[in-house]
Length: 329
Image (cartoon, rainbow, N blue to C red):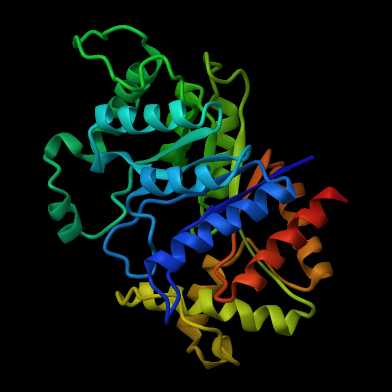
């Protein structure tokens, strides 16, 4: 049976603040744990007023403390923004606090614009071109219980063996994950174009490693469920508004739903939205079941990471309940 997990951006709703968003994320994680979800991941984004998970490791600690068994992790840490040693220390600390429950997904995108990159004050050593070397350096810090070749030991971190994942939306991440023998998470919930090619490359070229003996794929997938298709489309309009705002360079807090939003878009905007939401289950229980089952049959995904960009928290929880019910039979 395909496993289910949650991707949470710790969304800040219009009319709310970061404190409310953090409380909502913890409450959603508790709900996901009760529903039997495998893991709960938070994403690193910067300079985004609607996303409160920029300090990703801190929010992971907050969520892990509110739960008892669900795995909690980064989906992901944008490694070019950080020193591998610092990330090893942060996630080694989390693993010491919550043993056996921490994941570390790694991406090579910056998670922000050029001005944000400058504000993060990373030198050329943090270039995306160095991503494979940075992954290997981080892996050494987490695996080695004594000082590595550079004479440095990550404390905490050394010997923690926090499991690494490679995140991606292109063939690059698929190739790297296969070469290193790491599990692969593809961002098909917002960048579906290369999904089939990336899966083929990853599965064809995978080389077993100490962490993983065979390919393991987790795929992003959008959900928004309600009693009827129309009601679900109404709830999903919050996420649709957020997508349009981001595409026009106007990131904002998550807006409340509005009637007829998709119909109000011009043809170009509607095409863009439909493409980004290609892999989604938006609708009634039956509509969601059909979309989820078709996607699993098409991709043979080991795990789905579900994203629900819904303004109302009860409705958001209900969507995750519906997805769990569909998968459980």
